Length: 382
View 1 (cartoon, rainbow, N blue to C red):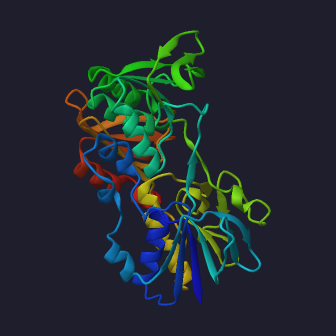
View 2 (view 1 turned 60 degrees about the vertical axis):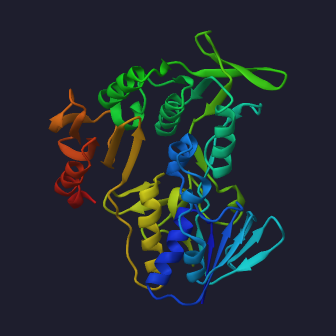
View 3 (view 1 turned 90 degrees about the vertical axis):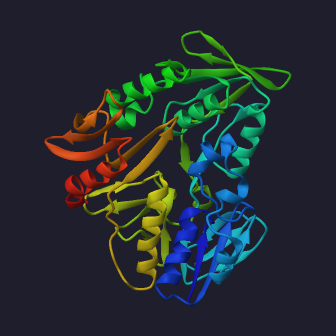
């Protein structure tokens, strides 16, 4: 028996570790498109971008720990095709890697705009290094995007001393995820910290001077001068290499409730869209916690401990001195009620209700209480 894990980030590494914890002793190969050993992505927009962490600190495990896992790491070689019948992955360098079980953990690729000097996305460690270098030489940053990543980058850059403008189509940051009530508090937070907000406006294009970005154009005709631009308009699952494989590809790799996409083929992490039995719907989650939890389920299914994956979704975001933790699936149309703490003091827990059912728990600078409320209101719903 052998396992090939395609993707060497958090989901891929977590699958390997879970297999070893479960006593799997056969061959495991981990194929990664990047040259870097497995590293953590959440710190890239915060600690690494700010310079308080270096590359070494972003690594998920030291070299000695990786060696102890007794796996073959094939790094710097991208997967370009999959033969499902033969369970063989073809790579950019010409390798053919075959295994009894294949785990797809290829993650996401950031969406971008024009290719110009000074225009960045933030998905990989190399992206973060290039952005940090530019920010250290700049004074004006425009963040295109008003979701989690855009808001985190804006907060980090503002703390670095840059003049920061965040532009996006929503009326408040994170509105589509958390609604206008919490979005309004995020608006106040960023304004208080000096971030200039141009929300409710879509970006229509970029202008350049000698090949380098100089301005950001908005749909209302306004122009925002910029030394650096970060495009944070979301990301798409990396599934192009699976075209023609016979797997179902629809906003990710579509899987059953056990994260199986085909016979002996599994998907895990940001790229996996699986059937959540508790919600009776397809779900794809883009967060660090899911990468670890889903990996444990996939490993269990590979070794024969068959189980469905039914998590309570969770993500967090750190912006300035504020930590927001979100459990469940809140939405913009849900009713938001503060049940503990105080909005005025910026320490509270809120419930999201839809059709008289609690669908989400959000904590604002109240981590312990948020976990308790999650256990009280959401465990049974998973």
